[in-house]
Length: 78
Image 1 (cartoon, rainbow, N blue to C red):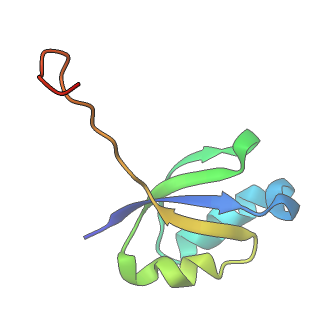
Image 2 (tube, rainbow, N blue to C red):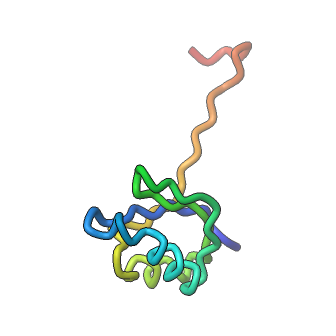
């Protein structure tokens, strides 16, 4: 099952972010958003592909996306 991931682009590859996106897609990542000013690419990939995606030229890090859920306002959690 695909896992949501966030890819950080290396500072020296920011001017080539479209090439990094193409390489990630070639490695099996389904790209959803490219946040050019931040150097961040979001999407999903199989967990078996994460190591290979991290080895793509221009990639600084590949991390699973974390979700946080707050309790509803009417809950007893304080």
